[in-house]
Amino acid sequence: MTDTFEKIEDIEIRLLLQALYDRYHYDFRNYAMASIKRRLRQARERMGFATISAIQERVLHDPAMLPQLLGYLTVQVSEMFRDPNYFRAIREHVVPHLRTYPSLKVWIAGCSAGEELYSMVILFREEGLEERTIFYATDINQDALHAAETGIYDLDRLKVFTENHRKSNGKSSLSDYYSSGYARASFDKSLRQNVVFSDHSLVTDAVFGEMHLISCRNVMIYFDRVLQDRSVGLFKDSLVRKGFLGIGSKESLRFSEHAPAFDDFVREEKIYQRAAR
Image (cartoon, rainbow, N blue to C red; front, side, top):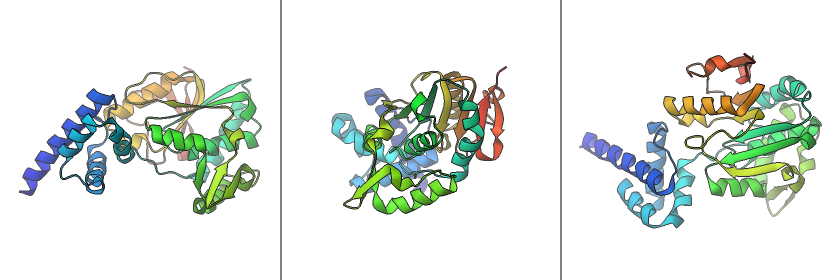
């Protein structure tokens, strides 16, 4: 009976993912199935549906429900200066190269609610590069993009943010960049003055521009091999020669057909440089 239920559920999931693509052009069909199944089960339980098919019927006829479902299908868990050694490596090894350019473009792909974006902007401000840089913050989730644009976070998260910033060799106090009140921290709007927020999908959209640094961390881990390969190819084509790519600690370029286009730069922090060849 359990095997039959699993088979039916798998069919329901495939149909729902196809429906989302056909109706709204959101493509989750090549996401890792174990992760998608876990999230859809959670959505079904919390949203009060008896079956995955019931979710499909509702979302097809009620576009207002789409953002709620996307909240389950897209991962929105992050923190500022997450994995501080990554940002320390950017500061100590990548920034000296970036200083040689008169202007810079940085892409935060899969920016979620903006924690990584603000981390990078603060780092660039502390290193004197912010004024010559345009930051592109992209995500497929419109609610996440809106949260990123507001730059407001629960105050109880700031202790972790502050400690991460310190460990990343921050040159100031994180409290210099936000004001607090009503249990919330609001990051200064000046941090957004050089930021372009945009809806962009690594699954279906094209090259984003000529970037000097792309940071896409803990996004590809949810993709299957085909989609991971597409994403790496997109990053390769979006980087200037000798530009930099940073990915998550559990992600790798090793098995990608595009791996030869990159050289290890800071291997332990998964920072690569597009080869000049």
